[in-house]
Length: 393
Ligand SMILES: C[S@@+](CC[C@H](N)C(=O)[O-])C[C@H]1O[C@@H](n2cnc3c(N)ncnc32)[C@H](O)[C@@H]1O
Image (cartoon, rainbow, N blue to C red):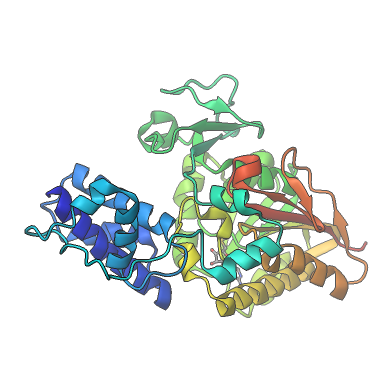
């Protein structure tokens, strides 16, 4: 592909990303992959370069751009080399018109910037939300230990006891240690919130929103594979990705359980009321993970945010019914909006007398409301809100 053709390809992908943001369609990485599936002539260098252009444009534009061309035009206004490629050449974009409307640079749509500001996320913090994430792994203590594990590259040891950091793009999936389940890819913040949950060997733990099991695997390691660990979700596809991962990790204790939305308690059967700990890693807007999925800022609307908050309340309500007296709930979202963190816990405590907020054992981060918050700028992690709740005895 010529450099100009790469710019045109990025424009076309951005059109798809913008459309998907409006319609709750596929995320950007899937759209990039789909674009190249039908364009075999593009080599790996082309794909890398186009992907880079797409993500630079997404990071640059605040409001949802009118078109891919408007987004790429905004990038061209900042980068002379890209501007030169709007040359009308074969397969390249037509020259930019002097009166052509360009997307405006910014961090996120204005309403969302306001909400972040209201949640105490200042301009510097907001900027860092769109930085590039490093690659963190967790050494799986069911099979290895950070102190003695030898890897093809030396990672930086982080605060979480088994966390190692590598430069973004490190191909850890090709390492033998990864294939053999000695390491798992997991953001440092995600490792810390797992530790804050404080699961112990022999306990009964219900991971209510296990998804593909990122945190469930961390819990199994903490529990030394002893006790009961139920991994629940309503999404069959996501949950089906957990079993091969658990097998690779040697986490034989994990029991996946597919739940029906609206009938979660019935689905839990005899386990309801027995849990020492329920982890509620609730669905959310993902504002804390914009470093990895920057287009999420275009997908969120005030209405979608309200729906996430309602789901989080629903899940907290279920958790309160399946935990045993004296047990605890660990509530987590990868969001920096109070609507999906502090406010949910305040509402829960208001409506559930007898419950108390417990301290979350997190060595970094800052307390926020009745919980703790981790941010990309302050903690170098994805953004998380985590709160521990203690049930009445
Ligand atoms: C943030 S993701 C979980 C990520 C996962 N814990 C991890 O660490 O990889 C939230 C999950 O909640 C699930 N979910 C949504 N509503 C649910 C419900 N009513 N009951 C159980 N799971 C639900 C979604 O399908 C999604 O997989």
